[in-house]
Picture 1 (cartoon, helix red, strand yellow):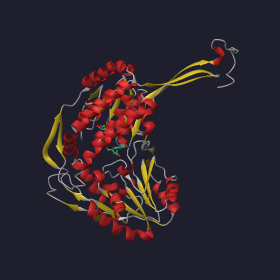
Picture 2 (cartoon, protein in one colour):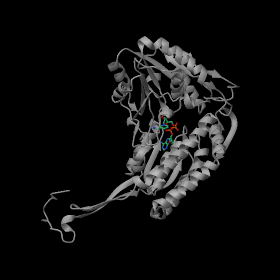
Picture 3 (spheres, protein in one colour):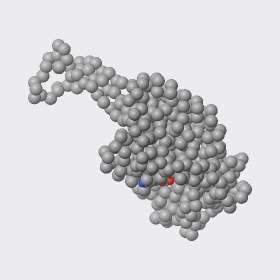
Picture 4 (tube, protein in one colour):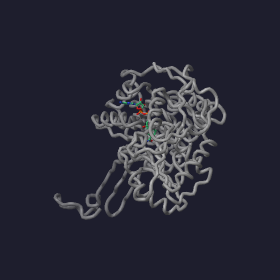
Length: 468
Ligand code: NAD
C-alpha cells in the first residue's frame, strides 16, 4: 500500500492506494494495447473532441483537485490552482495545434508521389515525478493521445493522487501505482512502444537502460542545476527581485528549472544581497500550503529536508530568508537560505540541491562567468538578466542549456509554444511546442517515384535516382 501523508502535517493521511504488481501492470498495458487500433483509427477531430470532454471534466473539479494537490505535495494552494490551469491550457493548445502539426503531407509532382504520415507509436508508458505531477502528466498525455496513442501512467508514490485523477479523466489512459518496481515492470513491457519519463538522474539512467534493452525509444526530462547570470548592467526593480527569489524558492526549490546558482558581478554583490534579502522578506511566506498568503510550503519528505539542510549549512555564510507563519513543527519545513562565500566545488554548487537553499557566487568578467555557468554536467535551464536585451541574448547563446530565460527564470518564463528540455545530462527529447507533439509520432512515408508511375520514363535497375 502507498500511504500518502501530508508533508505539512505528517500525521494526516491524505490517501491510501494499492501498489500495482506485475500482473496488474501487464493487464493495464494489455487494455491500452486493445484500445489503440480503434483510437488511432478515429479521425483526429474525434480524438480532440474526446480530449476536450476530458478537459471539461477536469475543469469542473479544478478547485477540489487543487486542494488535493496542495495536501499531498505541500505546494501552496495558489500554485496548485495555477498548475491545474496551466495543464488545461496546454491540453487546449494541443487540441488547437495537433491537427496542423500532425497532418499528412502530400507531394505529387515531377519527382513522384510522396505521402508523409505521422503514425502513433501504440502504447506509451509515462513515468512521472511528484513535484509538478499534473503538468508533467499532461505534457505527455495530451500530445500522445491527440496523436492516437493510448497510455499507461505511473505517477510518483510521493504525490500519486491528483495526477492519477487527472489522467483517469482522459480517454484511453490506464493508471498504475507504485515505485521503482512498478516503473520497471511498465517500461520493460514488450507491448510498450514508447517511454516518456520525467525525474531524476538515477531513475533516468535506470529507465533509459531498461527501455534501451527492449529497443523501446524514450524521451527523458531529467534534473538541472540552472545558473542565473546577472550581467554587470543588471537593472532589477523590486518586482524583478521578487521574481528572482521565487525562481529559486517556488515549490520550496523543488523544481527542475529552478534558479539553482546565482552569479552576480563582484562590484554589485553587496547591493544585490541587500535588495534580494528585502525582496524575500516581502514575497516569501513559509507556512501551511492551505493558509492564505503562504508562498512556500514544506519539502516533500523527511529525507529531502535532511538532505537540503546538510547542503545548506556548515560552509559559507548562510542567510535565512523570508517570514514564517503558523506551527511549522508538524511538517517537513526547511528555512529558506541564500548561501554566500562558497567555493565552486562546494556540494551546494555542483549538485542539484532540489530544495530551498541557493548559492550566491560572485564573478569578475563575462568569459569567466560563462565558463563557470557552463561547468556542469547538467544543462536544463539558465537565465541572463540585463538592462540590454541584445547583450542578454548574446550571452544566452553561449550558455549550455536547453532553455535560457531572459530577465526571468522558472515558470514565469515558460511558453506553451517553446520546446522545453535539456542538453548534456539533463535528458533528451522535448516537451511543449511542435517538437513536444512530434515526440509521440513516427514518420512513415509512401513513395511512388516518377519513373515508375504510369507513363513514366523508367530507369535502369542498377541506377541511383538523378533527382529528388
Ligand atoms: P525520481 O527520479 O525519484 O522519480 C521519478 C519517477 O520515476 C517516479 O514515478 C518514481 O517512482 C520512478 N522511478 C524511480 N526509480 C525508478 C526505476 N529504477 N525504474 C522505474 N521507475 C523509477 O524523481 P522525483 O524525486 O519524483 O523528481 C525529482 C527529479 O525530477 C529532480 O531531479 C528534478 O529536477 C526532475 N524533474 C525534471 C523535470 C524536467 O522537465 N526536466 C521536471 C520535473 C522534475
